[in-house]
Length: 311
Ligand SMILES: NC(=O)C1=CN([C@@H]2O[C@H](COP(=O)(O)OP(=O)(O)OC[C@H]3O[C@@H](n4cnc5c(N)ncnc54)[C@H](OP(=O)(O)O)[C@@H]3O)[C@@H](O)[C@H]2O)C=CC1
Ligand SMILES: Cc1cn([C@H]2C[C@H](O)[C@@H](COP(=O)(O)OP(=O)(O)O[C@H]3O[C@@H](C)C(=O)[C@@H](O)[C@H]3O)O2)c(=O)[nH]c1=O
Image (cartoon, rainbow, N blue to C red):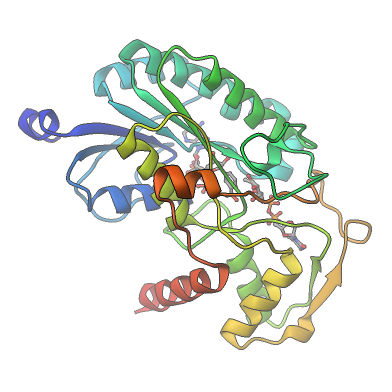
């Protein structure tokens, strides 16, 4: 536990979902920023490498625990990234999805109001129908799957809250981190092609894929600047998964013949995916100074991390 002096001279930032992809990148970047004292929370034991932060095991679906832990931490800022993020699982187990993505967010908003913390909620392009894209922050939500519905309900609670709030919306996050609960499109394409597996990849969905480090950087810009409102925090390139898969294959010198073009009539998943999403990030660029990497540059960064992780 840090000494009182350390905490007093710094702003306390409380992170939910710290064991996850975004959570690990947030902690990693905040460690290099001496204005913050970091309280990282996650479900169960700490899976984050390294030190220099306080870790608290917290299941955010436990209301009493949330109120107690947040009151004790008395954070200046809460970055709420924890969620049930397996979209198909959310469709098939809607009660668990509601608990993790809606009830838990309500408990955290209530706790944030009690200590007047700046509440930063991480949201998604899946609140939109996918009928048009890319969208700026004025898009009208109309989710097409239960995960999207749950995140939209979270947004509405945050927007109604009685504390300073911001919403960071993002898209198709990719990256590498320790002991993740789920994969992501870049790692999945790379590992499938390396294993010589044929993959069906859709070319009628559009995204602006986001390097996890860039999402973390965007959230930290919001925290540092005390920014309020909705910000699109995603990568700059508007691509189909088919284009992404071919870029990954090109970069790693993998066999592109294994990538079979599909579309939403030939490739379906339990939860419907919005066709055309992706974000216009002009507001975050101009107001926050957010500058994400291009998809290809991001793959290069990921490649170096993969090599480092192996050494
Ligand atoms: N990944 C993506 O493509 C996108 C993500 N987002 C949003 O970004 C945020 C971060 O996503 P990402 O880091 O990729 O997802 P991850 O699944 O990697 O991380 C989510 C974390 O939340 C934790 N969590 C889930 N339920 C609970 C709970 N009841 N109590 C405590 N912790 C819990 C998980 O714990 P455990 O590790 O134990 O499973 C996990 O560590 C989410 O809010 C997501 O909705 C938005 C758009 C795209
Ligand atoms: C598994 C698979 C996916 N895809 C496509 C569908 C989709 O557009 C893209 C990613 O599919 P996945 O099912 O891996 O990921 P998906 O669940 O669509 O990812 C979503 O996660 C949640 C948390 C979000 O908030 C969203 O922004 C989005 O990133 O790749 C294929 O074309 N073929 C495949 O075999």
